[in-house]
Amino acid sequence: MKKLLPILEKILITGIAAEGKAIAKYNDWVVFVPFVVPGDVVDIQLTRRKNSYAEGKAVYFHEYSPQRTEAFCEHYGFCGGCKWQILPYSEQIRYKQQQVVDNLTRIGKVELPEISPILGSEKTQFYRNKLEYTFSNRRWMKPEEIQMRETIADWDALGFHIPGLFDKVLDIRKCWLQAGPSNAVRLEIKDFCLKNGYTFFDLRAQEGLMRNLIIRTSTTGEVMLIVVFYEDDEEKRNTLLNHIAEKFPEITSLLYIVNQKANDTITDQEVHAFKGKDHIFETMEGLKFKIGAKSFYQTNSEQAYNLYKIVRDFAELKGNELVYDLYTGTGTIANFVAENARQIIGIEYVPEAIEDAKVNSEINGINNTLFFAGDMKDLLNAEFVETYGRPDVVITDPPRAGMHDDVIDTLLFCEPEKIVYVSCNPATQARDINRLNLKYKVTQIQPVDMFPHTHHVENVVLLVKR
Ligand SMILES: C[S@@+](CC[C@H](N)C(=O)[O-])C[C@H]1O[C@@H](n2cnc3c(N)ncnc32)[C@H](O)[C@@H]1O
Image 1 (spheres, rainbow, N blue to C red):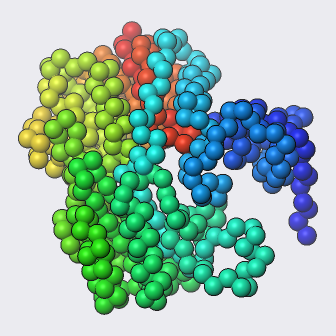
Image 2: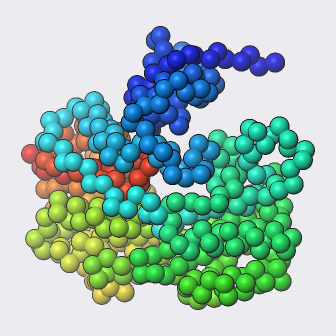
Image 3: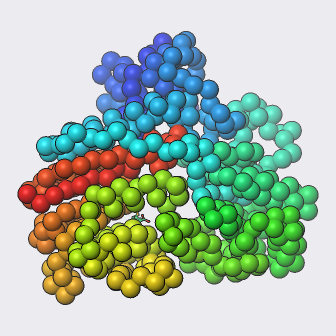
């Protein structure tokens, strides 16, 4: 039998570490504990022990931290999202600011200007424009339910995966992340499916009718609903979709997919329009961005606009510059700053995103953009720079892993006057800045909160050639 690890008693939670986990110190160990805040005093049941650190969960609270606030969501403590909702928003952004400072000083090790106070999100609830739900016939159960599992009749769930348990789904009644009609649509679909005997996906057996639900909303008021089925049952599919179309006339794009592969990704699946258009639009300063079922768009639209304005301010374009927008996604930043520059070149490795970027230039009458699809480290090299010209300004917004060494080498080789570095991971950003320090000086730093109640922080840094 597996040996039960010990319970550590009356331990003070002392801080928040990278990745947003609360920590306590015990002897020489750092202990990571979820769902607690600095100042809580708890008994910790260890769940994992390594040489220098351990993981555990709070099983008894001796004292609640004065910093704490009430969780607003009934799913708090089980759901993987909004883990920081027990911290007041002012504290959340203070920790995020600190995360940026710590990474830039400890990993970046470069001379820094004063770091501007983080730009908080005006909306701290219902700020997401996209959510993805999963149907499962294996509902995740609370510990007290497990005791009486024999007597439980409702095993079906429509909600979010439980972190670390790939086949268990937490049934969601109300999610505070996306504005209406998101919750109402999900609840209606679940109710309809249960009443009409529609089966929920069985991940292990790979069977069942209903698989996923993706809801996208826009500041224009348009709503896209994508229902993903596993089984191809036309009659049942039409009955459900007609019911939803009738109940929710505000859905402007009612789409469906039949996904019979092993995994949930839809990027390689055919999307069918059942009713309405196959896309919605997002707008920003009179620009329109077309969003199809598979298109990427920043999930907090209002804060994305603020982020882009910071990028534009940092870039300070005069109108005659050649700008490279690296990791351009669907070209949103490129199109946003296009009128301020001579030419913009966007690079991204998802070909469909590049097609969207071109469409977005076209529908906005922008004709000074060029977009290329390919892996940055292969595409962006000396030959590319020779062919398309040395950039005056580079905007770069890489994924969490940061920039590949070869990409940094190319930047150091082509020496743009300015680099505006947008990052969703201050640790890799700091590492990259350390390398760029050879030729660049950091002159402005602006953290931005795109995701309230999570530990995630976005950071924009302006680097100017020495
Ligand atoms: C943080 S997103 C940037 C999104 C975009 N700037 C925006 O605001 O919508 C990072 C982008 O980098 C792309 N990407 C990731 N790795 C890449 C690589 N090795 N080469 C090129 N693009 C890559 C991803 O597909 C994604 O679109």
